[in-house]
Length: 218
Image (cartoon, rainbow, N blue to C red; front, side, top):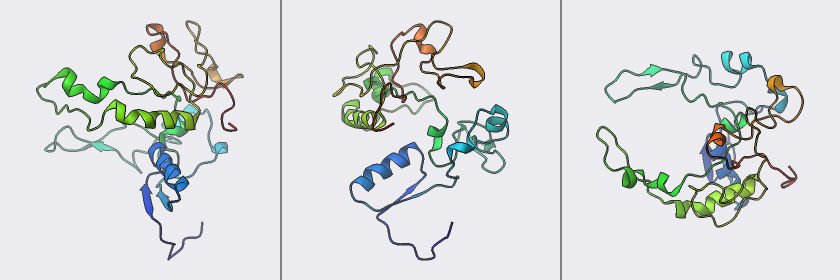
């Protein structure tokens, strides 16, 4: 890659080309805004991914290397920081979306107002969100239709009001004891689990970023 000493000026710089950064770049570019996204990780090609669990996890092919990119945390501002492997999201173009199960559930209306629902809990800093579900709902819909999410509107009794259903039909319910599309060892068939363990006591078909029909050429 040739580096320019005097790159062209841009309107917006986005730090991190993961799910949020890439989505923001898409919307801004479509509006005619000049965007540059800065990502410290590589831009991997599909040929560089595989099902080698030792390489992906133990040798940090996907997860951040704790020596090169340590993640530190502390419980209070007076504690000493310590390095731990928490939230091992891939650090590369695409971020966590390069290795995920594709579930795209919405927050419920009460998720935005936990302080109001739960009240004051000693030892916490619980607070309501500065926005409501109703304010965010149109953007949930835009993302679902941009991604081609599969699901069944209204199947989850706890979900909030929707301005639009899902763009693709729901995925099939899995039989007890197995997830459709998953093959141990990766042998044959499609890949990736379609439903979580929530199925066993809340048997609705989960919204998933795995289209059940052709969507936008995908």
